[in-house]
Amino acid sequence: MLVKILSNKYTLLALRLVLGGVFIYASVYKIAEPAEFARSIYNYRMMPEATINLMAIVMPWLELISGILIIIGPFVRGSALLIGLMLLVFVIAISSAIARGLDISCGCFKVGEGGRIVGLETLIEDILMLIAVFVILAFGGRSFSIRRS
Image (cartoon, rainbow, N blue to C red; front, side, top):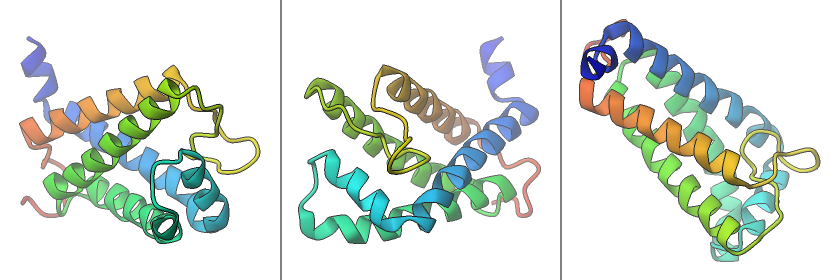
């Protein structure tokens, strides 16, 4: 029964719309405020300082492009895979921050002052989105696509 629900073309479309919408929304502030996003990345203390600025510029555009592509569907599997890889990185970073007791903004949506604090809630949200990616990869999700690839 669960497989039938998860493989339903409307369920897969809903998952694509949610994932795409979340990633597009998440990219907006980061694209507009790359310096603030760079500070958010730095606060995790996981990357070499030399790579932080590049990551702060590239990652939001990857989020935007993969979010658009998973919604319109020319490359559903490829964009789902890219979103899944980013979510895996986010899960690792958030888990590490929680384990180390860091009280930092997650840098998920709004960066800088007023951003969400890293915590179990953000970790669970990212894990649920990662599960949605696995469902899309497992069952295709190519219906309602501008190109069925």
